[in-house]
Each structure stands twice: as structure tokens, then as C-alpha cells.
Length: 78
Image (cartoon, rainbow, N blue to C red):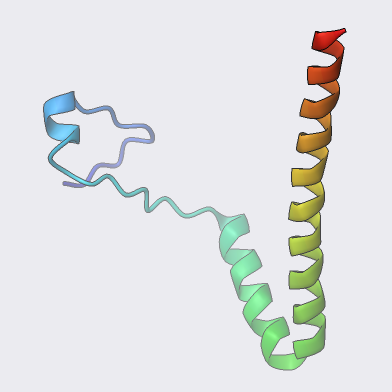
């Protein structure tokens, strides 16, 4: 099944029988992919540093959420 609708909705009896895949492509996403490929080919070290920073950011965001939950829990118990 294919559709050009931005957010298609299907009845449950159809949704359970098919796998829905969103193939919508954004210009920004393609631009970032292409930039990553070019940088990886020409400046391998820079691409590795970028990936390292992205991973570090994800870890920091996880820690932030954990700390926020901990603070809220402590405030709730007071």
C-alpha cells in the first residue's frame, strides 16, 4: 500500500495486517547524511570526533533526565 497523505490513518483491522513504513524524506536529513559521507571520506578524524560528541551529548541528556527524575522524586517525598 502506498499513499501521499502526510499522516494516513487506517482502521485497526488493516493496521494489524500490514507494516507501516514512513519513507518521507526531509532536505535537512539528506544534507546531513551527505555531509557525513563527505567528511568521513576526507577528514576521518573529524567525523570520529563528531560521532563522539553526539554520543557524549546523548549520555549527558540521559543523565540529566535521571537527575531530574531523582529531584522530583525527592521533592515528592518531602
